[in-house]
Structures are given as structure tokens and as C-alpha cells.
Image (cartoon, rainbow over all chains, first blue to last red; front, side):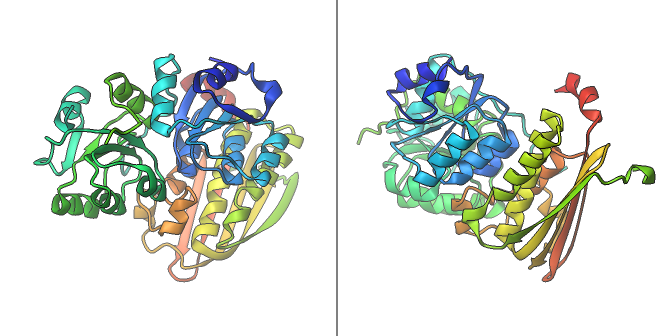
Amino acid sequence: MTLKEVKEILNAEVISGNHDLEKEIKCAFAAELLSDVLALSQEGALLITGFTHPQVVYAADAANLCAVLFVRGRWPNEATQQLAIQKKIPLLSTSYMMFETCGILYEYGLKTCALTVENGQD
Amino acid sequence: MTVLDIVKSFELKIRGGKDQLDEEITGGYASDLLSDVIAHSRKGNIWITIQTHPNIVAVATMKELAGIILAGGREPDADTIQKAEEEGIPILISPLFTFELVGKLYQKGISGMSSC
Amino acid sequence: MDKTDHNILFHKMFHIEGGNFTSAGLISDQVKKILKEAGIPKKVIRRASIATFEAEMNVICYATQGDLSLFITPLFLKIVVDDEGHGIPDIHLAMSEGYSTADEKIREWGFGAGMGLPNIRRNTDEMVLTSTFRQGTHLEFVIYLERQETQLPFE
């Protein structure tokens, strides 16, 4: 699935990265805890989140994610947008809630991507 | 659809509130930000999160949620379980991560636009 | 680690201010840039960026201030973080996934899920953590440059 398809399916607005819409998304990861994004997401993932601080872009860049999709109409501030442009990480925003967003994209066949956790202590 | 129906079809582990599984689910809510859940979730929602500390039970009680599913196989803290027992909030665990778990719940007909 | 490999090609120290959440990510970003310019393999950069981001967040969340040093040698990257703060009372517990002493403010910033230290360990080849309760924490980790290729088939 490409970013463009995500945009169309979810009626999302492109905040930045308009020329990168042909980018292929390997899989999706939904979280609002950045340490989980850093720990569990895989390269090339689309991050679905409601968290709009610039730190989300830093985390996406550190983990080589493909793009960030903000849910429930969340819109990042100027600092986040500038950073995303600089890091070439496309940002999109949809008015759907997180639940709907995941449900719809999953229905369209987008795969989950998360490393398995070795649960608990070791 | 009740909480018990979900427990059965998704083979969820139960970590608290096992006598409160017959509540009807009005919809789903997925978020890890407590303030967001407080602001937007609706009564009877099933809440999907990866947060495990006792405050999740406080939020679920306040918003009269039907239950909490911890995604990614997360285990709740001991005080979370204790609090869930006191408040009668089901705490359930799924090995699936939020994206896939929500995707499957959605396919079962649980909607994110909670009907009240 | 062979002593002869301690051939430091690059060293830089960064200061981190505790509690300054708005600056979080800046240092891992600078480390990433340096590694890119140094021509370090992409996989190593990803691991180093993630581990550095977590290390940086640890100082911001739990210490009053700290210093993070990056060393590049021909064989490995090493990052050393020393902070002043309340330290870690039980390191074994702190290393377990999901354990956290974070308050609500840290959680609302997307951290404090108890993934930080285990996540650093997962992304590094060697990790040492020592702490004096109520004084501070010393963390260092190493990522080998050449072991990457042999690790690929297992990913």
C-alpha cells in the first residue's frame, strides 16, 4: 500500500511530504508511547499516533520509519512540521479516531509490523 | 457483543474483573494517552492500550468502560490487577499489537464511533 | 575488546539537561548525523540512534543533568552517559521490560513505559549500567561495526 492510498482511504490531509506519496508502506504500527515505537516498530513502518510533539519525528527518523499518520484530526505545530521536512518524513492527518484508522487500514490489507516482545523479565 | 464474546473469540487472558464480563460493548477506543481516553472514550467502550499502570483502571472506572485489553502481550502491574478487582474492571491481554488487534476487532463489527 | 582497537577516530561530548522534554531527540539526531557522515552502515546507525534516543530520554526523565559521549573506533561505536540525579535503586528490576518509576508527565511525553533500558540492551552488543542511589547513573554501550553482516540472516 502506498501513502497515496492511505491518504485516499482515510481522507487524510498531507501536512508535509507531498512528493513522497508514492512511497510504499511495508506495515503499520500504532502507538502513542515513543519508547514503544523505538523498541518495537520495524523499518519502513507507517506510524499511527495521536502524539504530535517534534519528538515523534525524531523517533521516526531514528527508527527509519516511512511516515507518520496523526489520528483524530491532530495537527502538529510548526516545529514538528519543519523537522519532518528536514528529515524527509511525510506527515499525514486523518480525522478518524485511532480505532477506526487501524480497523480500516487493516481491512484494506495493511499488515502489522512489530517485533515480538520477549515478555517480562529475563 | 459482550466482553466475554471478545475474550472467547480472541482467546484473551483474564487478569482481573473476571465476574464483569457480561457487559455489552458499545464500541472500541485505542489510545495510550490517558488524557485522550478521559476526553474521548465513551461508556461501555473496550479500551486497547499498552499502558499497564494502575491509573488505567482509574480512567476506565471514571469513564465506565467495559474493559481494558493490553496489547502486545503486556502484563499489568500488580497494583493494577488489585485495583481492577476492587473496581470490577476486566483487564484482558492479547499477544497482538494495537494495529492488528484493533483491525481484527473492527472486522468483528466493533466500531470506533461509539454509539451511546 | 582488544586494547589495540582503542584507536579513537572521533569523540564528542554532549550535555543533556534533565527535565527539558522539548529538547528530547536533539542529541540522538546529532549522533545520527555524525554517524552518517562517518559512513557507518545504515543498520548500525539505526541501532545506535534508537539506543542513544533512549539514553538521552533517561537523563531527561530521571536526572538533573548528564553528559553523553560518542566514540567512534574502526571496530565499534561506544556511547557513555554519566548523569547526576536520583540514580536507580534496583538495577535488576529497572532492566525488566515494563518496569517503570515514571510519573504522569513522563508518560504523557510518550516515555516511561519501562522499555528504555531493555530497548538499549536489545540494540547494542555490550551494555554496562551502574548506579549509586541518590547520586547518579553511569551507562555505557558498544555496537560493533563488523558483526552486522553476520547478524543479518537471523533478523
